[in-house]
Image (cartoon, rainbow, N blue to C red; front, side, top):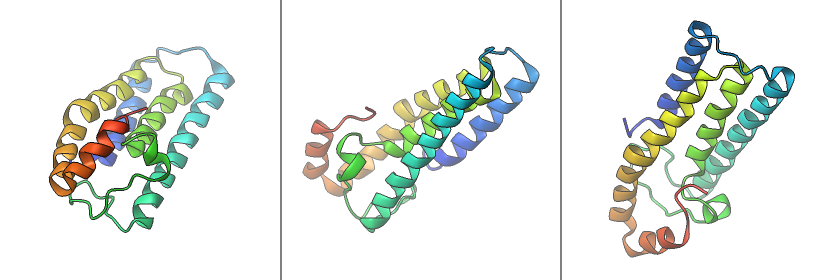
Length: 146
């Protein structure tokens, strides 16, 4: 599971869509909800692009199955250790607003739980093994989320 967070996000987006179809519990926000949802999704995609771009500029892998070559601490990584997961969480949070479904909010909550309790701790062990004290120093000054 910790190897493919993007696939988890895509699976949860599909689950949200299925929930909205099977259990049409509308929020009743209409156009405001759709605009707010689209804004969250757009900001999430932008955050993903920025975070991936910083990894590429640092010539390190974005693949969670490989150990990193460089500890990226610049840009958005100065404020949060996991901007890619924040971007995915924003996408998952905006989608139920766009679909106008209350039950769809189960998906971002599940994503947060999986990332925070399972995926990120495993990744942190790998990064700490590669960068040691440098990572522990970064970790002590930069939040996991925001």
